[in-house]
Image (tube, rainbow over all chains, first blue to last red; front, top):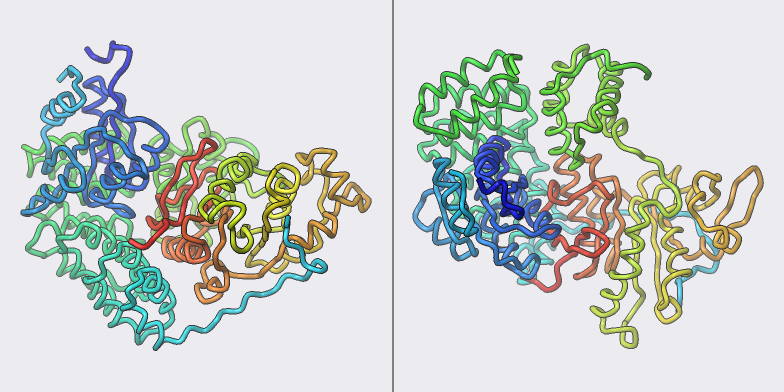
Length: 132
Length: 207
Length: 288
């Protein structure tokens, strides 16, 4: 179990849907990650200004600041993080993934994402062995 | 140098509105300077005649801050013309546009209900997902019933999970069965199952 | 109201309520505040036509704010105002924000026009006068720069009090004794009036923050304090207020919100910036 290791990878789960935050958080927490939550892109930017994260899991459709704008802000001088970003969206139109990569995401997944897949991906991107 | 002082302390002065000239503001909607466009859109809040001009720019304005100001002004006018003009953009490929429009519609409880039959029947499931987002925040006594309808009838799992997320804050024991039924309809969706299983104990008081 | 909540909130009700209140106001209550929140909700329910948490909460959620939300926020927030309240933000202004403002405006030798500071809402005046005191006593550049301080509020009663500037012991209890002697006049019965020199350095205005046409006369502010008011507004009003503040600020100008407030629930137009003393918001520089 990686939860016994002294430094756990810190993940920020960003989604306006409370149920999605809870789902992703519980999957990642069970796999040994230290998880924080934000309910829109701006909250994520504010959180990232106050703490370091090793991974961001970001929804696309959110009020106030959508996922693409959020990732752009995380990559810009506003925050300036190089931590990996996974975008997870209900949208699977042509160009959506391309748009995510241009914003600075490392991976684009379409909902629903199987729990073990999210955990595996998070583990790979943070180079942490996970208890999937 | 130092603090700038008046000759003597003065009584507070009332700041009187400078009445904006609607014609000038409409012209400024096409100004090359985004700050000028932003202020023009905000200044048009009282001008009913500006609605078509503002609606026309919702789909074309490229600066997100100007778009935000256009929507702040339009949403204050909770009419079918505005709601209908905004709702077409729920299908937009631009995330910034569809999410900003959904947030604006969520503040328009008078005119959004008339659009719901069409939105709930939209062939594009992404539009229906955005509709659930609107209903999540719409302050309207029937929002709950519309969400129930989506959960019971919509064929797409992402729409149903979106509607469940929107329903849960106001859900009661009466909604428990329809959540169980949703899991039955989409047995392969692990997120749906997790969400319902987590919520049920609270609703039925068996936590 | 004494005693435990008669309405008996369940844990699930409490969680649901906290999620709603956070979404509406950006104020987060943990279970550590359970007793306090329960009691205040109970008071709101007793003052309402509803007799259960469920019916009251349903009405609150569907009524689109108005008086119900207003009363709830009044119950759940502390409205007390006093000198040097939330002082860490004035620390941030002195140590980080003012040097940044001067640098952005070409440095102390080339700055054109005064540095402008706005307190909105200024209520009974404690905030703008606190700003004046800290600048005079603690900013080493004050003799080299012109600073204009403005206070504004929608309420003419509080503005009249701000203009009179006479305060009780409780309001000035955080003011150092030396400052009290230097800038206040004892006017009897434990009351202290801000002296004329400080009063004449604060210009007071009556304005509605949501009125775009009126707010247009506020321009080029370098620093704005807008604390603990946006939480009271509904979605559209808070958005418009944020837009109006943006218009009142110079590009690169700084906005301070109340200590538990966040723009993240209101408007995306500002850029959040981390200072050593906490989070502030900036009007971005340069057109996109």
